[in-house]
Image (spheres, rainbow over the protein chains, first blue to last red):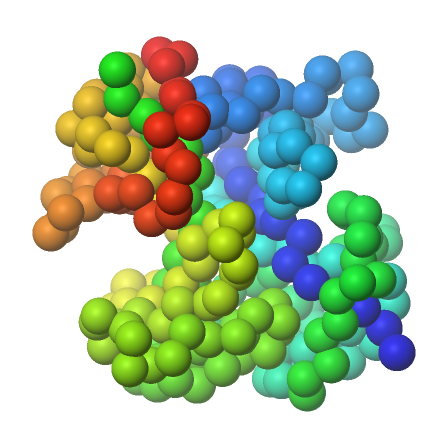
Length: 126
Length: 126
């Protein structure tokens, strides 16, 4: 039996200047940026939401700007299959995550656990 | 001095069948739907996120499907002005809220307080 839940969302920004984009969203949402030297990729800046907060990141992308949701799971393949049964489509696997498309058209990602406590939450509806 | 913070996000769905869209997102995210008879508009279905959770709704729209963020404030005009100084643009006022566009292109809304406790949070950076 696997677990999954909303991890948070990613603010995808089509911009040559990730720092400027991250500064805007940090100020707009009133959330400090995680120190740059703690980031594992130059394409992301994480917003600090507190220990129980959602995982929110500003990402530099080449496609049009948007906001996408992330679903975290301790078994990505099982979660992708569950979501396929609900009507979502598998778009692409990238590194450790899977990009999917909802029946209503939004792209979203199934990712490894981003926050603590995922085992307390189960999505078993199919 | 006004207050503002992230209220949550709206899953905008270009669909003739809001119920079906809401059922998908409810099952995908593992969040129950607020009873339909408690909804104040036929265009929205709210997801139940718990007392401290973000405000999440599925909305039937005529534009392309997307996800948009809401910023809640106890003074919408002051908040819109603050966000304009940060580089966002005012797009349209609708009912009680204001649609804005981020410098990075995403549309988002400034709305009246959706959750309790907003006075504890201030966004004063400009």
